[in-house]
Every structure is written in C-alpha cells, then in structure tokens.
Length: 289
Image 1 (cartoon, rainbow, N blue to C red):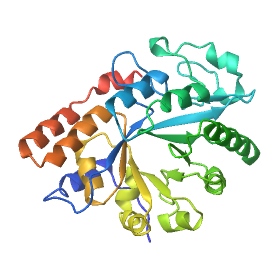
Image 2: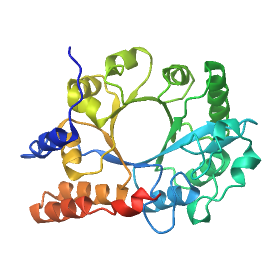
Image 3: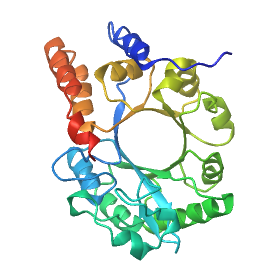
Image 4: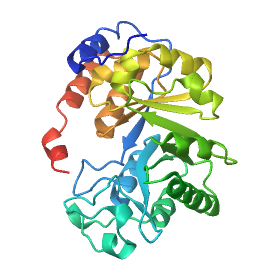
C-alpha cells in the first residue's frame, strides 16, 4: 500500500463533509493535552493545568514524565525546560526545580502529580513516558513510574503511553497496566500488530488515521481504545466521531468539550454556535505558552 501524507486543507475538507447525519458510534471523549492550561496564568504540565482539567471534568489528561540525571521523576514535555537550555534528562532535580515557569509555576514531581490526580479518580491520567537515551534507561523509567503508581494504588486511573515501542511492549507485560502506543509515522504499527503485543490503546497523529482510516475500524473490531491528535477544529471532531475514534486529544479542551456537548443535543443552532466558538479559540495566547 502506498503511504502518503494527506495535506491538512484536504483533511479538513474531508472532515467537514463527513458529518451529514448522525454517526453510528458514541461521541469521542476529550483528552486534555498537557492539562487545561490555555486559561488564566496556567501553564502546560503543571499542577495548575491538571487541577483546571479536573475542575472541568474532562475524561482524561495527558502528561509527560521524564527521569532526571539523579533519577527523579518529573513532569515536563521537554527535553528542555521552557525558555532555557536545561535538558531535564541531563540535569538534576535541583537544577530543574530552581527554574520558574511562566506564571510562576514549578516543574512538578511525579509524586505531586499523582497526589493531585488521586483527588479526582474519575479523570484518567494518560502518562506519556518520554523516550530516553537507551533501552536500559527506559527500563529504569518504567520500573520507577510503575512502582509509584502501585504505591498510590492508581493502576486503574493511570495509563502508560509512549512513542517508544520498547517502553510500550515492556509496560504491557506488567500486571494491571493499560498500555498505549503513540505515533505520528506513516509507518506506524497497526492496531492488529499492537494487539499482538498486548498493547490495548493506539494513539495516532491525525494524518496517520486520515490516510489509513481502516486502522480505526481494525482497532474497534479488536476492542481497542483509539485517540487522534491534535484535534483543534470542530471538523476533526466530526471526522473522529464518524470513524468511531474513542478519544480526541486537544490543547483547547474547553472548546472541544463544548462542541461535543452540543453535538450530543442534536440542536443545529447549538452545534453551529459551539463550532464557531471552537474555531475562534485563543490561538495567540496559546502560541506564547
């Protein structure tokens, strides 16, 4: 099969043309990408962004975890701390913690994140384990986060996800772990290939699924969870709904959730108003974060 990248303009045209009538599948749930931070003085991957998402009651929150040079677990997309040249995986806890993020926030520890997350067990925590330099270092990361999650008795609430296939495969072997594979590659493993490895969640960048929508069908037939990212427009929600995607990941969870809520009513006026509001999202504020 020839693999190609579907231009975003074509993708949006395809998405906007697909929502005629009501799809046969359930509406997707919202995953707040790095929390809900496009509000107030919050910032991504901070306790503030997690707390904001919990208050809004989104189905899930995605966050990133790294192992520092001195083996501390800290929450950051990385590799560098925002606005600095400090690489979290090559720096100590003290070096990272000393940095003030925008809004005066600090890079959280994994303990702080889990403690806050446990306050609302209805919100799933989708933990992206960042790629590390070697498989051995990734094994250390996995062992450390697994022991922490078990200690907090949160295996039912915390899902394990990674771009690293090694991390995904090893996580899937651990008792009680729900493992996700995430990829933006046109050569990404298919849901069937993931299922054979015990990986039950497949998260793909939107161009991957739009080029190969049959992968959504395959995942559904296997009873797997699916996520598409990044969903920053109502047309992409429509596309995800039509194809039975279970979760949409977005940097604008408030706008996305409002649009999904409007779709659930079936009221055209409400749907059009929510779609217009979603399109008018505060992209300028988002760019500086």
